[in-house]
Image (cartoon, rainbow, N blue to C red; front, top):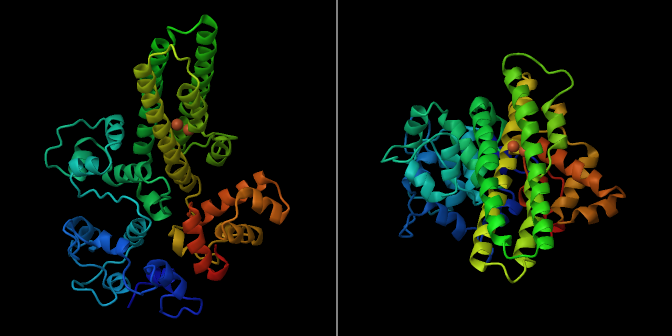
Length: 417
Ligand SMILES: [Fe+2]
Ligand SMILES: [Fe+2]
């Protein structure tokens, strides 16, 4: 028997236990062969291209007892007769989520992997480690051992690393419920501290050196531009440090702050990383030629790094902090997996008719402006609908929403561009 969560993903409208042809088409190769596409196969193969399952992947598909068995049903779905190694299964939505992460080409981390391997997979995570107080010299120790030594919940650490590394990853409520919010707050607080006292200080001194040969007027205008941006960032961090983090800490103590909710924070949460792009363009395109080019490249590296890091930071706030706090605010809400979230189950999360119409337009590849024109609404309204659709479905990318729309029979595969 295939677990119901899996079937819910792969079954057709009548609940027939077959893989709908549209889904099969997604997984099949260009020739339309219903075999395992090379990308999927690559996920399961080892370095030599042998069609065996690497140990890390094997560990992901194994059940809680540590049996090194691939979920036989999953294997059957992807193997198409090639399966050589089939065994028993566990069947939690966490495992399914990891499988989907693979299908969407995202990096998977587990508490059992070596910390050194995690860094090798994405060296930007060194910044995450440093903010959580984890120092180098990992040796052969795994993530779980190192987290426990540093008084961190290993699953929450993995959650932070996953969202940091995979821009489009929106964790399910099951995963969020198991997370430790105090570890998230610790990470966010240390990140704010790093931006304020390290990254921005470095950028400021780098700009100072770069603009030294400029005219006084040029120096003034560049410095003012940076100072205004820095003031905006400071204000953003101060608000989160002074209002949001204390709100969550109080919530954990059972105290509600009147007039404040995490939804209010989310509504006003600005994209700070977007504003840095103007500074970047200015340095990239418009610096006077008297400026030292090596200093300019060095400064750009600092800015690109900050931009990337702020982007990930905002993802952690939007995709971990906000939904996690919402669960604390509403402890009665039931957990569900994004892709198996049936609309009848929870009225609060049911897509409205209008949202379904917008979802269909998104799946058909229309841009916000085109959707606004088609439905005779403003772009802002489209954005609000899209935000609600993502919140309710747990799916952020257009590709993911398209699959969701197909699976929920909202759209015909033939109408997809
Ligand atoms: Fe923040
Ligand atoms: Fe923020």
